Image (tube, rainbow, N blue to C red; front, side, top):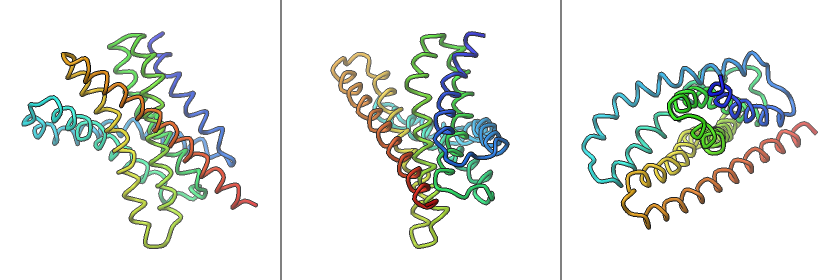
Length: 232
């Protein structure tokens, strides 16, 4: 029960904070579809990874292996899966009518994914893993989703030539942020015999985390203010 609570709590807190920021609340039923759709995105991710795994067998150096695993075994498969679910559930939905909506829907999809991932890691690693994931991994998934939702809304409400660019950024921006985050940790784990490199990678990881949080909070505020101005 302790593991279950420690897995669920940070997910619920992040969803609540984003939900509470929304000026016009989204239908609970639609948010739950997004959240449980995040569970389904795990299955899509596993299918994608099944096809990319044989490619990774050819990389032997710690750098190449870490880079491949971070971007092509984790970041891109996961963000592609979440974007597919997000698009399927809300793109044409009548309640997707404000800029902030893209962020909240993307966050709920991502938190569904994060909850399943949390349960797997926490039941295997215990409370220490739960604490680390509550502080780093869950907010990480949340802010990757903020980036996705930010551009998702821009694509939804833009009818000009940049629509395709915004749709591309829905995937590319969160996947790159996600990949950099994972790469620093994976490369550090594969370089335990080089303390200086590990130190540099941890500094890099800290910079990436701070940048992800700052960027995410800024994007939340931009769409929040945009909707307030449109309502006036």
